[in-house]
Length: 258
Image (tube, rainbow, N blue to C red; front, side, top):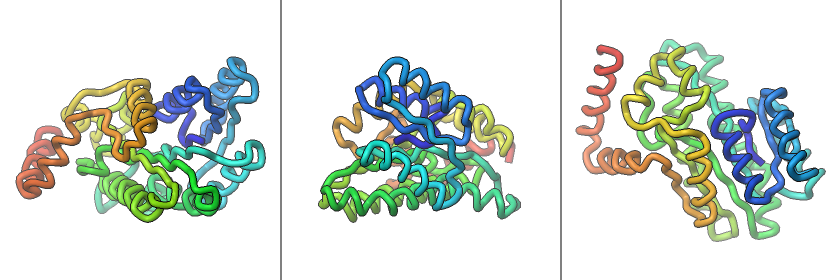
């Protein structure tokens, strides 16, 4: 089951899992692209995909799509909380935008896990994956809501692994930097965020990220870093946080001029 799977990383993930032989439940707000992708998958292998249009900003919506998959296919082996939004800038961002960012980027992960865990613990097996972004390890210049929610998503994945890892749960967290998706191209609308990401390193294709994810899941690797340089940035941050913040300020100056 992959949320945010109509386009971008989610679509690439769902396609990669399907190519590996999995049945795939596709969840997204975009009904048209979602049904088109499911149609392609079912044409290649009948009854191997289902499309579940949904707005995941409420707990009820998350429960509804999970229940729909269980009703059709008994249970979910791997859940990938990939849906996310890039919205908001600084302390002037309105509360509705803050709440939506937290609902999709963080609370949807929590709501899904809340509903998945009893079944997984009962059978002693389950796999929870999430997309948190390099911003979850570092910070997103230009967007406080994105930074906070992605930090939270990574922290939640860590907590899940610590708490349930000895009871059969496997957890992976994807933290890419720049990826050629609609989110990257739309990031300029909330504060030139795309320019910052492009200045920080290479921009990968979603399919490149998906290949790395499939390998990481095969290895049951917790942290998935399609951009290896992110690990070096994280080490620099841990070794000397003050110096790292200074570097981030210089990057901000380069892009924003302040």
